[in-house]
Length: 353
Figure (cartoon, rainbow, N blue to C red):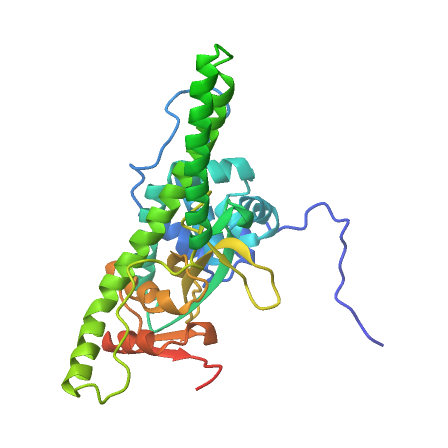
């Protein structure tokens, strides 16, 4: 007859007397606790005043955040829930449960100190052998900007609006002068002028930003153009059409958002709609620890332009890996060549040759 392991959910005490009994000896929670004990806390903000509700110790909060981030839990509400449901988080929090507001406020008010402490923990992980910079993995996701896509304008449309607003302001100024001569209410028309002037200032700033970006791109492309032009002239025009010089002005369809000019219109895939967003990327250890090694925020819909830069910035922190794994969205000939120049082997899937 089949026998079953007995269980009783009604028993008074289901947890062990010591939570470490439920954690494997090689669990990352043990390392996080030991590493945080060695981090200097002088840069962390604390409330020096006595009285009121006791505050959580910075070491507890720091260890809880690092452990949860290493396990892919980033939301403050989910971290609070993990302190109840995750044995490792419950052990690190010593069976206390910081609420999500406390977690979010600790991260915001100690941003610089937290980032420095996280780097110190990564360095300890590398020295102890937990973090092996052999193979890392990179991926990206689109994060919505705090701006609406309907506030995006094409460069040619912005130019036309600037001209129209300039004409409107001139006409309204003339009306205001006429109204003053007739001794009417002087407050009616100037307010309308102010609204148009404020919008024109936004458009002027947006156009100036696009023009500066276009000028920078043209300056970067000019050496290659000069080389191609010299090669074409050497052939005395027998090499086909002359190379086209880089344009200092942005193309008419280049877009900029008036609310958040750093963000761009992009979508996650062809099955998703366009949204005003950023392209967030992260590099993660692929050899067991799953620790996040570096991050980057790009304003290009494609992952290719920032592929090499995101990986190579690790040279300033914990060092460069030997191998990088990436999906087809990162596959780029120039990026692969740049990584190989730095003795990094990129393994990226390709959608086509």
